[in-house]
Length: 194
Image (cartoon, rainbow, N blue to C red; front, top):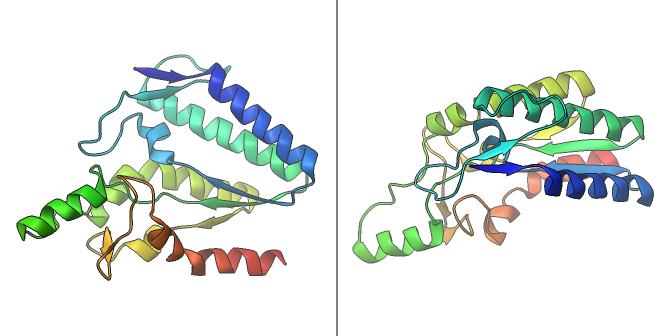
C-alpha cells in the first residue's frame, strides 16, 4: 500500500502558490485520474495501490479515495476560480497496462495481431468515477473539459498505434506523436482563451 500524504500536499500547495503568484490566467489540469479514484494500476502494470487522504479522511478504502479525490479536486477548482483563473481539465488518457512500444515490437516481430489495446468498454468502466467527478466539475464550476479518448478510441477499441507509430511512451503516457494528435482539442481551448 502506498499513501500519498505530506509530500504530495506540499508539492500541490507549492504549485498552487506558484500559479497564484505569477499572474497566470490559464491553468490546465491533467492527471492519471483513475489511479486516484480506483487506487489500482491498470492491467498487468506493477506497482502498489495508491491511497490519498485529506483532513476529512476517515478510512483507507476505494470509496474514501474517491471522496477525497472529489473533495480536493473541487477545492482546487474553487481556489483557482476565486482567483480569476480559467481552468481546462484534460480527461483520462486510456491506460494500456503494458509497455506499448515493447509490446508493439514483440507482436510485430512475432507476426501476431496487437491484442493489448484496451476496449472502449473497459476504458469507460475504469473511468466511470472519473467521468462523474469531471462532469460534476463542469456543471458546478463551468470548467472546460477535453477528452483525449474522443481522438484515441473508436466505438470498440482505443488505439495504441497509428500509421505504424506508437501512440504511447509506456503504458499510460502518450508519445510525442500521440500527443500531437491531441492538437485539435487544445486548439479549441487556446482559441477561446485569446
